[in-house]
Length: 234
Image (cartoon, rainbow, N blue to C red; front, side, top):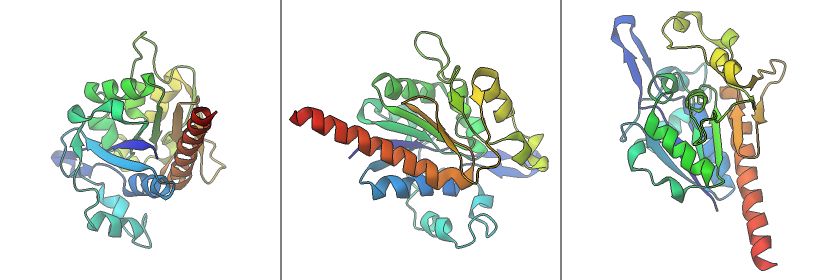
């Protein structure tokens, strides 16, 4: 079994505009369910530690019609996170960044997170992100100065899906920033879309892509483990 660290936004509040955001429920829970189904272990981290702020819209009937993710949230399984600064990166085989607009505010330029990403990547682990989760990957530089995503195929939440009332409150356009350094793809005709930019980099487009994103990540980790076992017994 592989060990995976899921990183969530601690949350962001704009009192002047009555705007509250954080991590998106489906983008944590759907991948976690897929990973755990394959026997992998998932830990949780956030900038501040403790209970991070979930985007309340992600638990609404519109986005969670069956109440599946609200039930998981209410159970308290995401109430305790480790501060990013306290995470021992070398213990993990993969890291995935949970989406939600909050990632653009407190994860994008978080240097402690960039360091964590670099350690996992440097030891051959997988770096994955879904929806707005690629925001910190945009600004992560490798030790050689090259951007982590530079020149790779990537996806993430597209401009034409951003709610009009939110656009002016966001610090940047994720699609624009991804397009600046990488080969951004939205594949609008696909119901779900994820892309492997390399053997170590996985990105998913939106909340609807979260289940597929989780399955892809879980499958890859299982495959890596199986190859390691075969090599050990050869």
